Amino acid sequence: MLETSKSTENLISFIPSLTKHIESFLPYVIDKENYESVKLEGATFFENKKKEDYGNFLLAVNEFSKGQVEKALDRIDFVVKQFPKFKAGHHLRVVILAKLSTHKEYHDAYRKALLDTLKTYPEDHDMRALLANHQIDKEGEKGKALQNFQEIIHHRSHNYDAWLDLAFSYLINRELQMAEKCLLTSLKINPTNLRAILMSGIFLCEYNKYEEAIKLLEQAEITFGKDKSLMRNLALLNLQVGNREKGWEFYSKIKHEDRVSLDRNPHTEAIKQLEIDDLKSLKKLVTKKKNHVLVYFEQGIGDYIMFSRYLNMLSDQGFKVTAFGQKDVVEMFNNSNQFKKIKFESTLYPDDFKKFNYKTFIQDLPFLLMDKDIPEPTKFDKKVIIKKKKVLVENLKKKFKKNTKKIGVSWKGNKRHIYDKLRRIDIEQFSEIFRKNKDIQFFVIDRDISPHERKVLSKFSNVTNCEDIINSWEDTLAICFLMDEMVCVDTSLGHIAGTLGIPTSLLIARNNDWRWGVSKEKTEWYKSVTLYRQKAFLEWSPVLKRVINYLKN
Image (cartoon, rainbow, N blue to C red):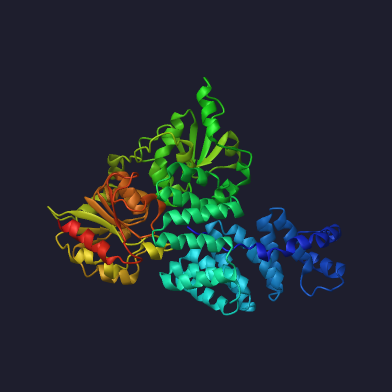
């Protein structure tokens, strides 16, 4: 619930102060593309008062400020390579790569830039905090991140923000008591900072005090206004306790530029954000013109699947709908025969954006279409999928035993998910399901199975690991269609199973995702899903016992 990514704003505070230097130096630059020449011109202009390549550094700052990000990166790479102890150069390089790291291909470069800076300046704790957050957000290395935050607190014990970083890191590493102690320490230093209030809301939820958490955050709104993290947490909490209309209203208040990086595409800036009034206006028009809306998918695969059900409802309002998301998911949706009026795209070019009159996000649709009942889940064409994946299906069926129930399973999600450690179950514990139900065939429908997990699975003759035959979401769909039931934690597999109408036992943490509510065993989103809830923090044994008994009976 709490957004933990550390901002790089404190590292670029030097940029405004360089404006006068940039404005005075630029007219003297003869050839901006000649880095060696710029270096000499900078040394001459500033009379060698700067030991580093100050000329190219200033030009890189200027290029970055004007949105020429990759050009600025190339220039600052040149500077840092020649002057590896130029601290401001390292900082600018990190800032530039932080902006580019919304694209996966820059993740490694951003990580390397952080490590390079720390190698030269190991006492640079801003950089260490950024590295720790990168390890959490992009690498799923939550244990390594905790070690970095522990190192930082030795040097910043009077910094309330450092204690909050450490508190959250302890929480996602499943150390609740240490997390609480760090949060209380932060509150003693500064009892009114927003991050501490947001985290206090999380801890109230851990103890099932949802209404108290909502009151705390509503009070914070009076002081802090419509902060994006505050709006997001208020939205999710209200949705979780069943205040659906209020929850979606809060969610819609989050600025689009704060939602996903896709919307930072400059080509979308001129496109109008879709509002409820636009739906009302369109209803009154006889001729439906200027009605083309671009719908961004956002969040994870589970959200893609869950909210896709609203696309036809938007189309029924008179809109021409194009849904935009990642390629493998778009291919999956093309196997549904219910989206005859919806166009799915994974690539859009600058000229393509000119045809859109409106833009919105897939998770804004429940708010925009609030007066309607929750529609049925998306339907995928089983015959099409099975035929398309004929070889995979036939090979898997060869492993089926006659008159034996077949159950798909997954005990973990993506390790890069911020709350992965809180929602996953250790394989030794989960495997009790296999041990106590030897008359059932279990099929692991997951990827990135660790060597240790494979070793545990190999002990059970009633378990088949499907990892090697899963190369796309279509493969996952095909395997799921062959299952009688599913047992999994809160991950995309649960959404797929629920969408396909497969009887599913979904094992969820005590402070679970908003969509599963707070106490019920059934969910309004998927009729075939039964929720098995933790009663206490990290206590999975009672949950597994209930599932085992259900399978036996």
